[in-house]
Image (cartoon, rainbow, N blue to C red; front, side, top):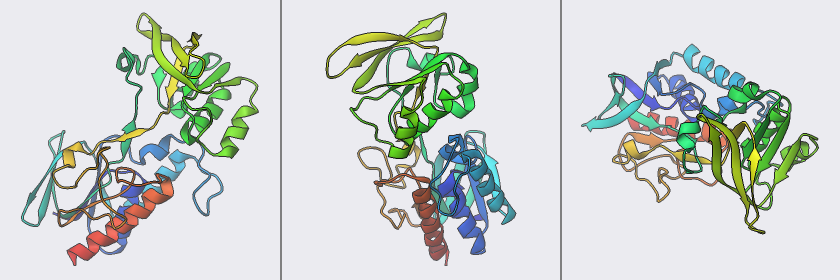
Length: 302
């Protein structure tokens, strides 16, 4: 029996663990993929107060080390359901684990959004990717597309421009939504071109591998096919909260409908991070949620 179980090992979950452990609570962090969350895929992180530049992987490793040094227990398992019995919260995992605690913090994060096009799922790992850090080297000297115009897309495109022959950024809007500094840096790259107001309408493939993407300009209606061997998608994220809807109300977009206090309608259940309904989703706001949720959980236990 732990004092607090935290589902999710990203910045929100790990920050919650640090705060709870420093308050003298026993903590178990259960993460299904890899500790560190989405930030671990960022090649450069330059917006953490007090840190000029750090890789997402390094930042994630430091968070994990900090939590473990304070006594956090870690399990790499996929939580599939939660039950309550009186004041006890019971967590069940796909791997057969059953864990109990007096309080529960859901910091389950989000997953990559896909375009929903025919054959897309089959091409993931065969030309479609979500992480330039992980997969960019596979496309050294080749032509690729980056779909999206936010910070993640701009960062990924910059990284790809260092190894790929040519990078075409496809943005559905007439402007970038990411930071101006990143956009300006990208536009100076000679091997990068940008297609604004353009949608990806389909994929071309041969023998199960991507060979191109079909695009359409929303202003001119012009259509064409771009010959690329890789397409990196950075078109947003979606929450994975359905398994916990019984304990924490969801809004119409599937995010936990909890306020800045990170509390839910279920006593002893709290939410934190990108899975929560909020306007800004950044590593700093995720960490802030983790601190708030952990302190709220400690108050509940008291």
